[in-house]
Amino acid sequence: VILRALAISPKPMSRANHGLGSRAATPADLEDFARGFTVSEVSARWVARRREEVGTPGGIRESTVNDYESALVSLMMLIGDVPARRLTSDDVEGALRALSVGGGKRGYPLTHRSLVYGLGALRQALSYGVRQRWLAENVATAARAPRRHGADSRRPQRWSPQQLGQFRREADT
Image (cartoon, rainbow, N blue to C red; front, side):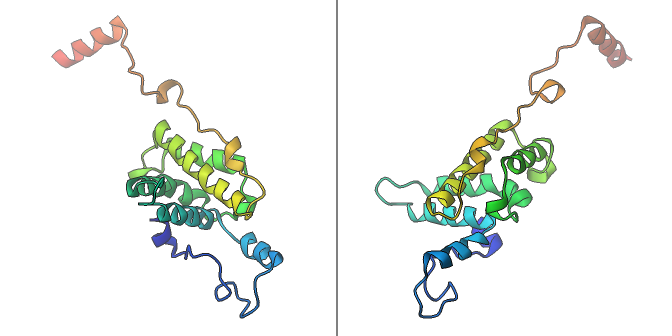
């Protein structure tokens, strides 16, 4: 989904696609190349890398990769265009807060479980960026998914005897 929606090529950088012609890429060239990565591009490259592991010994299942993609979609709508090197933990938490009140499928709030899963996928994607030396740090490790409190909680609300009596009177009329 992410790869198709953004039309990003997850192929490793070669001489042909880094714009250097026949000259080999230097570490400075790689640094300049990675500097422009957005959060979506880092995430897409991580998903593509995970997809390469499907069916290999010790690899992961196709459904797991699809779940990672699905978990990242809502977050990418909010922070995907941010340059990955400028992303902050406050940006990540702000996106998670926004998704906790609306913005999921059909505009409904995402569940806490979905927020945690999306954050976990983002952490893994940014860790991949750190391992590739595209990023200096993984800011998602400091972010926390918001918890629902009070009226937003899924815990059933109990009626007082007075509220129940009022309901019964109105229902009987």
